[in-house]
Length: 157
Image (tube, one colour):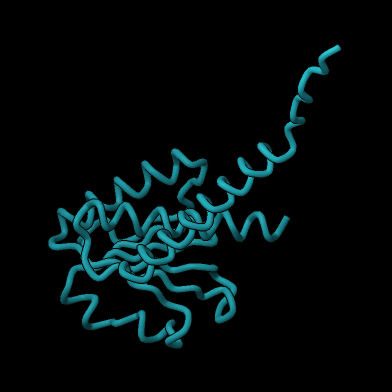
């Protein structure tokens, strides 16, 4: 059960990164904090171009993750929009304006160099997962073909 939940949480975190990327957020980071803290398993951090952009990103993230069955438990920072936080339980999403992100630099606090991916790393990981999935599909199809009984030629009498 815990493995399934961990996979779901990771899927939500990666989906969040993809949404940020599609909606022009900058410097997107996915950080695994599961072994550093009990408050969450993942942080996703991104920079918005403005407070309006940050609030629009919040709407996109909430809509997508709620569509995947994950509700937001708490929101913070919507008033001034310079540091917005969405708490989805095991996933915490931080959206900063550039100056606030530079000031707090929370990825430095939570990253040990091994537990963080930027969008280049995330895309690479997704490509590898797609390749592996395609290889699995090909193997499954090949196995089906191998397991089909071959009709014996009709005997002539």
